[in-house]
Image (cartoon, rainbow, N blue to C red; front, side, top):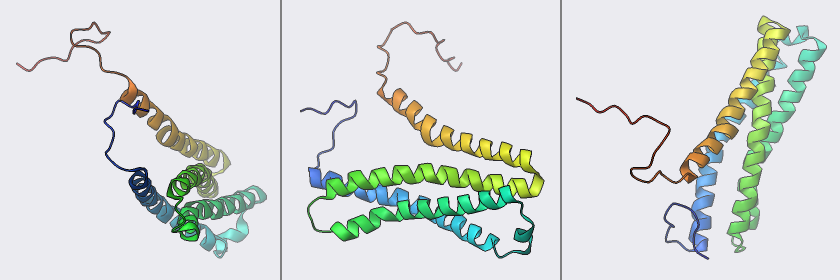
Amino acid sequence: MADQSPHPARRETPQERADRNFAELLQEVRVTQNGVQILFAFLLTLAFTQRFLSLDTVQRATYVTTLLLAVVATALFTAPAALHRALFHQGIKPVIVRISSRLATVGLGVLMLTLTGAVLLVVDVSLGRYAGIAAGVGTFLVCVGLWVVLPRLVRRAALTPPAAPGAATDREPPEQPR
């Protein structure tokens, strides 16, 4: 079956493609994992500060929920390495890549909730409940915009065939320099 994408196919075997895809996935996970681990460490230290004792019930619940989300995100982002290590040399790299990609995708969703919770907590403690909720919602919307909406828009733009030369368009042609 021929490649249906508008981009030329790479000349690589399925195993080479799996190796490349896994290397790219691991690089993405490395970048994300560092941020998650820093956030997790920050959250761990909060419970040992003097101000932690003054948190109300909602703030404590937000803290514990966010901390647990950070644990889950960390586990999801480290799972591809553990999966690869456990199944190394089994000849199933494409399966490892597919499952690892799903783990990373779920990890991004959990990270989105973790970031939202962390911002909600910090702004709530610093400026008040309504400001915390607004900042949390804003954080969530920024993540959805950049991590969900933007990739879909880019994909749609990349898959839209270019207009034929001389075809009528709704747009004005760009102004020519004089």
